[in-house]
Amino acid sequence: MNPKQVFLSVLLFGTAGLLLFMYLQVWIEEQHTGRIEKKREQKETLVTTGKIQEHITNQISKVLMPEDLKKKTGNLLSVGRPTRVLRKSSNSQGENEPPNSSTDNSIETHQEAKLRVFQKPTEMKWPLVTRPLNKSSVQGNKWKKADATQEKRRSFLHEFCKKYGGVKNPQSNLFHMVSRIYVEDKHRILYCEVPKAGCSNWKRVLMVLNGLASFALNISHDTVHYGKHLKTLDSFDLKGVHMRLNTYTKAVFVRDPMERLVSAFRDKFEHPNSYYHPVFGKAIIKKYRPNASAEALNNGSGVKFKEFVYYLLDAHRPVGMDIHWEKVSKLCYPCLINYDFVGKFETLEEDANYFLQLIGAPTELKFPNFKDRHSSDERTSAHVVRQYLKDLSRAERQRIYDFYHLDYLMFNYTAPHL
Image (tube, rainbow, N blue to C red; front, side, top):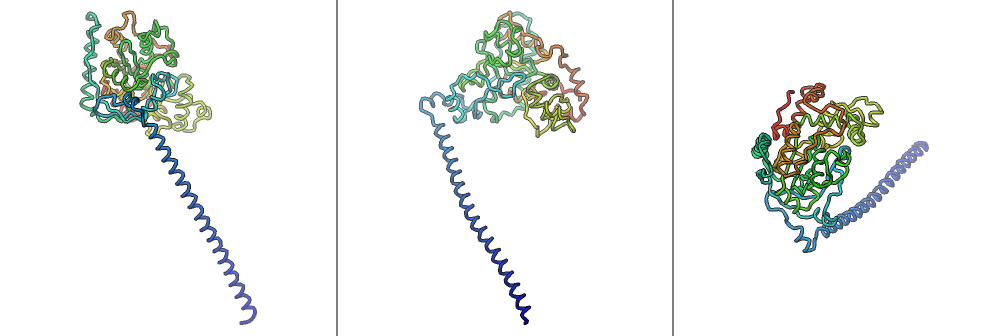
């Protein structure tokens, strides 16, 4: 082997040895770093676990109540099919307010409400017992037709719920279920609010019955929806809710689902609106309008009815539901809360005035049948609805009907011609 070959061999082995050394150095550093990271993670896990345990301990300590409070807030509702009572909410909503906006109606202290949030789920018998209407205040034969109609509606709803309702353990908690029910204690009335079915004028009537106003016609729209003068049933404690559900006259007023939907769209999207355009309009346009203009995306105005329907029927809506187009079955729970009176928007004035007779309202109080918003617009009727539905395909119209199918059935509305 000549010197040149020896030199090349040494150089080759030396280079290989250097590379091996560098590789081993990197490997050792990685192993060392990994052990440090593992120890850090274990330490963080121990800290996190400790914090969770501390949080649980704190929650348990909050739940533990003094004996006097236990006696006060014990099992106030009778034993039966259970409804979980998880929280207390107040959902009075105005025309342009965000859904579930807060109210000042609570008559409980903050501490009592806080304790009740963690209270053991209370139980209540469902459905509530249906009571015959007290007709002692009705005079003469004027209301004979209205009375016969009312009995048919009550009977139909009762039989429907009995046959199809299949009352099981309600999934919603009690305070959510009664959050849309307004209370008038003087005449012992519970009214479940269904938006776009005469609810503004019903709130005016309740304010007069409560002694908060002398005449319904004098109460402005803003006072009705933003004044927060009326109490909702979820503002009472469990005993108060239970007592009123079982002893007060419960009323719900409904409307043809397709008419109600179109009415809500016209009100919220065809007129300036500081809440529905930026919150719902922008999200709807962004998802359902190809090549939307920057202006439309920025202000949310100009939503088309077809786009609104896409949003309504989308299982993955870009923004949640709203009470103005939510199903009545989810607003008022008519197969759990057996309503004593079922009124309809289509016969609103007659039904409402008959109801006022039943509850012994002052004879001078009549239901105000006026439109205080967009009064120059034509009322949403079957004719108007057809104009909006003609832009939809038959399949889309069928899907809207399917969406409100339960409301159509339980309130005996005729299926629309699709």
